[in-house]
Amino acid sequence: MGDARGVSAIDDHLNPAQQRAVTHGEGPLLVLAGAGSGKTRVLTRRIAHLLAEGLAAPHEITAVTFTNKAAREMRERVERLTSGETGELRGLFLGTFHRWALEILRRHPDA
Image 1: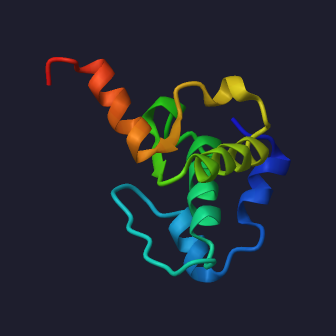
Image 2: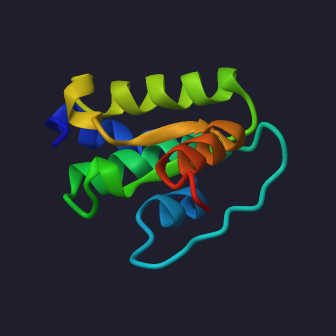
């Protein structure tokens, strides 16, 4: 899905712990870290890694954050790390907790 530039950029500027998180195998992964420690970098590179390696389709990925600004920044970073073609990201959910909950309610109005 991403080009060679995007795939190599996924690994740029990661410390060993961040690299392990980005390339983590199947199953859940919890990242606990303080402000400014690179959580957004890890999350966006993890998404790009999953897409580039074909480990997940965009519609299988949900990433949530607290603010619209952070959600926009995550989307921009993922677009830069992948080839930048927004069509490749169709179905990928990057948004706030509130927007995520709203999407669930829209899809399941009887819930």
